[in-house]
Length: 186
Image (tube, rainbow, N blue to C red; front, side, top):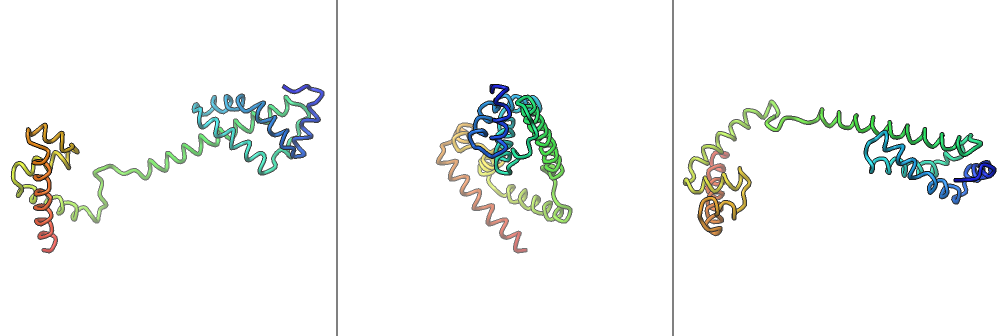
């Protein structure tokens, strides 16, 4: 820490915009300020970001000129208050962001009102098309596209080769496209 007799000189150098004074200030207080921010934010990465953003803003916007401190304890108090306020602002900003995000979320099965009939119609068309597949094609299609299984998993489950799975899947898709294209043009 600095010698109290040099406090005024140090603060004056800082207020004059000496980069060495800022470097010393950052080196001296960065970890302590990060801990202060962490006690508010409960997130180490965010706490470090708040401190780094503070020092960047402090230097770029020449906020060091606003310091009225006559001693290091007064300067520490100023730094603490700045970091505490920035941390609280970050929390408020995050809560606002989360609230807005939650407002935008819709249930997975939600469809826009004007599209519900179209969606129901499409669902019926797909089900009718699936019913026109062979039993094996439908099994492979549902395991691959609805259950999200890989060819290897499907071949193991159905006791068929991966090549057979590939062919059945290709034929199922070809048939579905043909059927759905016909119903679309009606």
